[in-house]
Image (tube, rainbow, N blue to C red; front, side, top):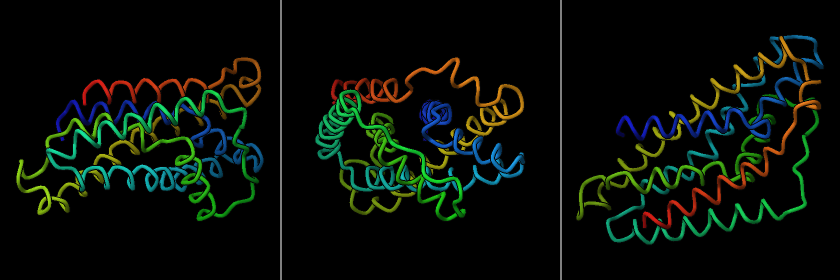
Length: 209
């Protein structure tokens, strides 16, 4: 991966980390409920693991199955999916509800996986992944599939590290300084912003294709 690719993946990870739907709000709620900063800190690794799993599935499949011919088709299909999913999120009246606070680490990771998948977290990496060079050149895409899958996993890992770092910083800031009251005073619809970014990413993917 190039420096630009890693930086882009990290920026997307930071954006995911800022989104309360990706888990930092849940971690803050756990900390406040148990009156413990440690409870907050313990909630974040399972949340990051679930996010990683969701993103890694998409990243590994995209990176492993690409070829020179297929990459254009993949970009078009991926772009259409991004735009359609983003428009659905923009127009949908449904809101994903928080699960109960009493969850084990495994249950918390599963919740995070489902939440990240429902919000199309892995789809956000499509414009970056399809722009990467095909491993093994024009003719060796089948033999290079395992290498491509590893590259996709590495991309998901870099993305998730940035996501976890930002989520940790925001969660601690809200927990220690502001408290959850700030969310009622200065709330904006992050889900709508998220959907708009999905649509924009899809359009970028289609233009590049």
